[in-house]
Length: 327
Image (cartoon, rainbow, N blue to C red; front, side, top):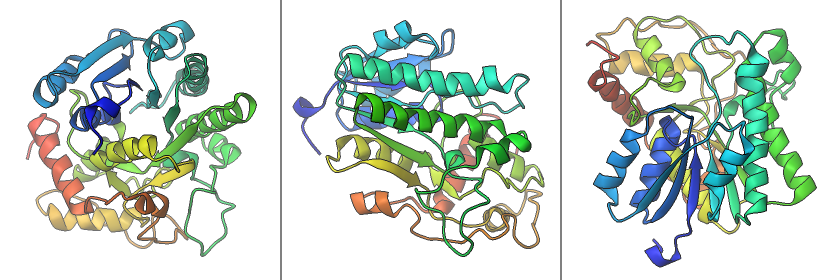
């Protein structure tokens, strides 16, 4: 680990969300001493200061209230930083009423606003949190071949099925690569699968809700949103690895393997026999090819993934302690 002296000032957008909070915690643990955090105006950031106090009390943690649609507010958060971890992107548990306004525009314009600020203030590298929702669904992918970073979600397919989150994440990441092409900026993207682990934030996030709903007997096969799962601490470590690795470039899938949601449900059912977990019959993702080292690009950089059982157990304990789960 490098000494504190070598740690550049960084900015984390969406810092009080599930992944954002873990990135802040991991930065503090890794010796970063100047961290700008941007949060949605009016949202709660108290847990970030608790993290700082318990992890790295000498660090400077600044909170900027910034709607990502407000370019000037975003610029204030980014100014003075050499790295940006852009995580802020709307993800709702409910279906959007106006998907364009609620999901697509903030994801795309928010990304462009962050990249504009990064360009203006000479940021060395931006780590963009994309999603496996920018990889799948892709019905045109060759059968018999495991998904990798060369896959892109089929936007028209998603629109026809009113699956707006994958549309928002795909268009946002594409806008980032278009920006890189036109304006020149060092950007790498990380595409996490369903993200599990302890909740540092007070509210329930969409990915942990997948496990919660499964424990409550949901029969949703996650057909459009599933490519495996990953512990949130691995995503946070991967983000910093991508920021610090000189050779990192392009897209990085972040999942502890690719496998069917039915396999995941089976594992959860065996670990948690007291819950009414639905047992799926056959493939939940028809034709999905399993792949243990799907995140080969990150593994090659040195990332070691946490076992899936640990991620499930950690999430379970956290859901209980936060009062989201009774048993």
